[in-house]
Image (cartoon, rainbow, N blue to C red; front, side, top):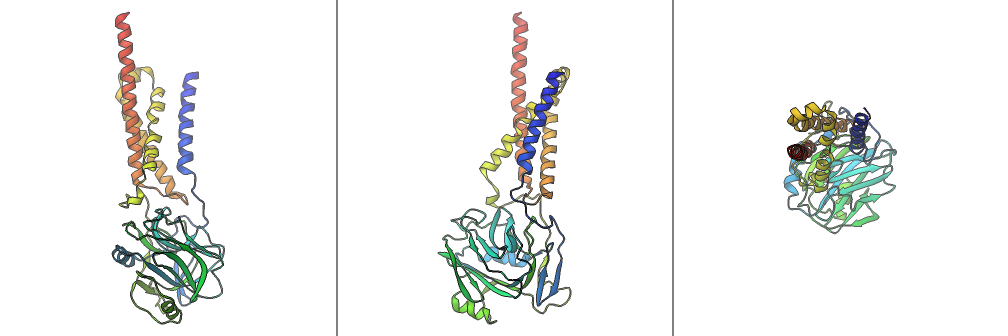
Length: 359
């Protein structure tokens, strides 16, 4: 009886450790988890509330084509923040796969602006380095913002004036993800909602000059935008060519950034011990007569159920993103553990039979 309790305690301890690493948040953020898109027309543009997000599918497709061989970018937006208490950062414009992989993102952190850009010299999230400019946003008026990357540095213009804060950055866009989505007001998996109004935005595959930015600030178009959306004067029911975001979860990614050798190995190794904790719980008769059931079939089924439950729970958590690739890694780890257990059981059984023969 004591050994049985110890075996159950070991299994529960193992499952508790797995739950801790699977469900601990990367970073909790305020706002709804998976809200429906809710956007209103007003104040001369589209008003995004906490719980609203729109996707520009045509614009995202155009970006993939235009920036395939580009090495400069300018992001322009005319907006008014709805609150200075937003964080995460809250996503104003995001061209990303999830919270850990993006091509670029323009966001708000309090009253500061955050711009992350993925180049061949940064990580897949564009955070090392990232442009952080404090004291930018206002809730009392519309602001004209332009972030420019010219292949050597990132800088920000606010209402036509250059801010002194900038960062040195090099590299092209040859490693941009292929399955990223262009979204306003949030990010594909959800949890980074933004509150405010956007009147227009545009993305250029070149570094805009100070004279061009001044012209845009004055309301004069400069042309050549890869993506350009103007929401001023929209009729009721129009979204300016955008669509309500369909929150995507539990997907198989084709982006190279989605593959991490460390993450792959951890997902595999984490499930290898599972069969060794499950097998001793069966009666000696079952272990002898139905070895393949106790050592392979049931542990493999249990591993799939546990992995599926983990991915489902991660879908409900802010800051966590489920992925079907993890299911494959977990099942591979469970199967590896089953095969190792089968070898150990077979060796022990042969040793026992040999001792009986000698006796």
